[in-house]
Image (cartoon, rainbow, N blue to C red; front, side, top):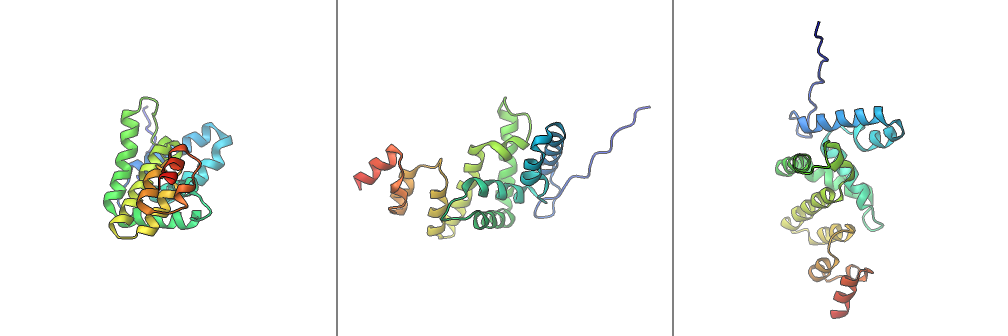
Length: 180
């Protein structure tokens, strides 16, 4: 007899829509936690305790961007709000995750970009900063740009004109600060 294992009902996203990407990520996290018990706490905190992909992504990106000037809690709330309010941004996040899985031969799980890929996190942060820019919230956008260590300090300094942005120890930022 062929007995099939019932598949869990797909989870819903922040807008209440069925979300196969989030369902897949949760299943992969559960499997990884079972296979690697040492990582179970991390996987629970980063993925399994969250109700939606938006919540998990906001928490993960905010933790990476933690900065004395922009605390994790503020960044997490801001990211969650942007992701919940903008259906195009929610769709872009899911498309980005699946694009990594489809195009990166080293990636076989949708869980990996969410947890580990700083390029994916930087892209999400850039999109958040772009929304702030479109809304005319320049100071908050510049603060987000400065909190991202892999973003160009030169761009932040030139556009924001802040001494804080030019105080970086990178050669490019130092050159730009002397040029001003």
